[in-house]
Length: 153
Image (cartoon, rainbow, N blue to C red):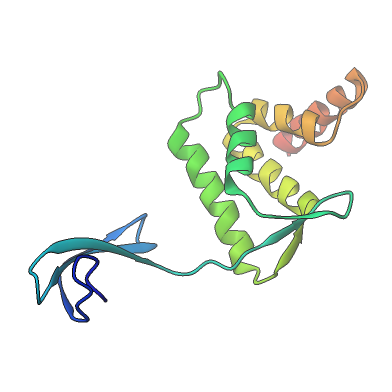
């Protein structure tokens, strides 16, 4: 690793520690020429996942869009931000593990609903009502009845 101060080729690692739940490593380094210290981060290079939207257009996967949708669904609910972050991490990790370069937005929406159903049923119904574009109260009632029927089984 080149020193950012003097461009000397050799630096030594003074300290390493895992960050982001072990998905990255923070290293403190020292230049063997000028003696200055600096920090580097090492993490696996993520492949870019393209999301194929309903209209056929494509855009890069944005975890913040998923996060914001879940946060909005969980608004004023007793759901910890750490739990929401974990759901988003699980979804993102699952998509990366699929090893596909293109994933349909409908698949991602279904994943979000599946995770929300486990996390908070009210947040699930809120998200589903927007995602599935409930047009009337009967659709809303049917979704709640389906949810209650699965809960009783």
